[in-house]
Image (tube, rainbow, N blue to C red):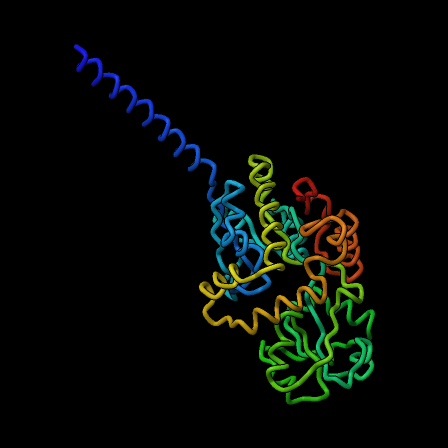
Length: 328
């Protein structure tokens, strides 16, 4: 009789503990919600905070299992987001304004970069942005400049259409033409130009009044309506990742080089140093409120900039483009 009772007790105890373990495992699985985040290019220092949040377990601490899906020249992140193939997107504010104007229900919920990293690069004898226009230098630029900053460069700094020449994402034409300037990103092209033996003059357009944020975190209106807590956790963990990355980037850099084998330690070090030097992540309102901050005033300034420059094809309510409800 005792043996039967003992066996039954052990069976019941085992059943109870099995239920407890199963419940705990289920809760853990439920806590780590799967998220796919699409970037705007191949892995690089400019994406470091997101990789750091994976490497240091920051996303996991916030109940998230995040997959970073790299962008590239043939990847349309906005289409992937609108189609539900990714949950969050590393966005471009002007593109977001256009998307909302076209009825695509996307929303910016944080701004990783307080300053757009777009630059005008000239040879060292050019000492101001206005000098580029005054001297009518050849200006190598991509077609997208016509729908972003080139109208502003023309109206404010004397650039002309005759100056514009196609930029094929090689710095060689600039290196061989001393009477030229070119577009670039402050974290990228100046590095390549220095490797080519030239120390250029670099003009960060944001420091001259170019208003957009950059690397915004964007998602769908459906996501923020149905899963606001998930959106809030993703934004918070991502910005904690950026704080960590700028302090000690080693963990993220290993993942970046895994995803993008062509990336070098030297390029990563240059990118990080430049992000710090120009206050790309930590400048502006982030000095007081921390990384990721946005304001309605900045978005309104972008709308006014686009309207003045003739960059809006359709009317849009700028307050539908962003939400301040999820800032860390």
